[in-house]
View 1 (cartoon, rainbow, N blue to C red):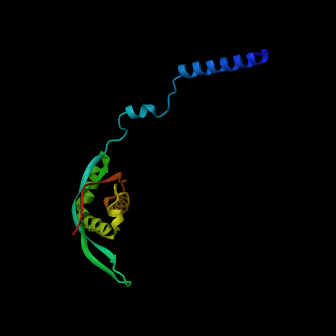
View 2: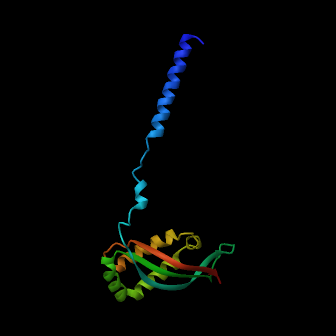
View 3: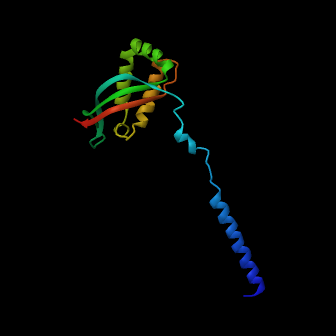
Length: 156
């Protein structure tokens, strides 16, 4: 091996050794590594907004430009609002004062939803529409999240 090649090989092997040793000794810590171990920053309480069993008219195109409606889809679920403990009394008062209106609005939103929206895995579109409607009736406090539980949908 010529002298120049020997020095180049020595230089690269020394560099590789330094890089390998530096990489093995340094333990990288990411900013978010410890977040999984932290306690929750906010505690939320569930507030029941009732059980619902809603027959939904499905619009079908049967050809020749005629749309037909038939009650052929049953959508059953339980609705909960997640609120902070300090806001729970406010949502209880709003529920007592507007329960009928809130139930009517929930049913209207569900009946106005498309069949695809009612069959989404997480019901994200439906939850967003319900959150918009319910925020007006439940008061000025922010509605943290809606939980739709015990979902059963079936064709009639």
